[in-house]
Length: 474
Image 1 (tube, rainbow, N blue to C red):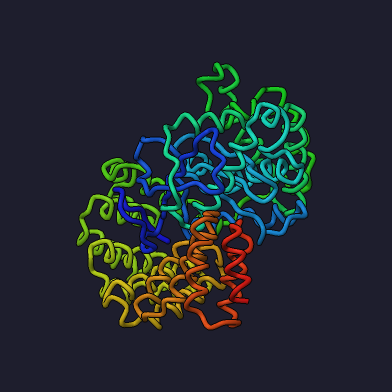
Image 2 (image 1 turned 90 degrees about the horizontal axis):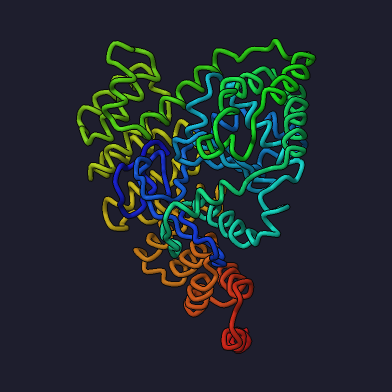
């Protein structure tokens, strides 16, 4: 996706840099939490989770060789982007790590970000997850389990999953609890250097990243960035890292021009969506004719609701870069959010044509089609959504659109089954079971769809009455 709506609204797939506020209650045992759409600059608290095809692609391009070097399958690894200006990163589980946008923006080179990811991979591969140790003994496990599952719901794009809304204290309290032992930190440091070397990367970036924030050592804990609260920094630790890093064969390797360019685009895009438009115009002056600056200004005009100017800037970019799918995506988003779905469709279609394997782009296109004629082209919508779900089967918003498209076709069974899939993907087992039971009433018996509805019921804590009804219908 390509952009961010700077105001709360009902969630729609046609928003590039997609954010979801994930607010967690400290004692909650709910299976999934509800993210509510929020602008990045909203200070109301919570966890702003971002989905963006372009940024995810850039991060995985940098991170996947590290995951492979650690013996992890990149396809199983999720790098969660959190829309937060503070500098932080942490490991949620062996397959899920989180990185704040603020940390990405603060990295000067791709190699610095690779260093941080390698360090967090050291925690993931070493089992230093947020579910262990003192936090478990302190009763943090239910909270962190809920956080982890809620994060997955947010990744799936479920802003309405049944909210548990609290202030920001729960979020910051959680991050404050993600404190690894000094022994684990040392192991993660050494593992990071090993993984970077195996991947053919320099470990210089890891050393330089820590060295850039050496001054954090003298701050009181309350004044440190969250990352350095949970990952205590010291001169001794930096020098130990430097000595080992300088011994490595690839220490002198430098980032490729292509990777540097992509990293700069990612940073500019994130900053443009996070910062107020005026700040973006100051940072990226009109005299700066580089691609990242032009891109950032187009986003800023969009955020400032200067639609025609934003479109003019995007058209100029597209004249120079006609095969950039993310520019077409952003143009489609600008038009869609301006209530011009018919004009948005060709832009989203071009984005899909240029990058057909990106599920979020297909979801944008499906939504633009569905919004035009209240379901008269429902079959087209369903075709796009099925292709998207083939790559991202737990995308909650895709299931929601699919339910709407089937409803437009008056296919009550499929509409209810898609709604059951939507709730099941967020962990809302109660609603998943209810919709699956309703779907079975409409779906032809013993079809794959009927069996899928039955499976959802069976794994969603069915009641005795539900089981009796299943028994009566076979």
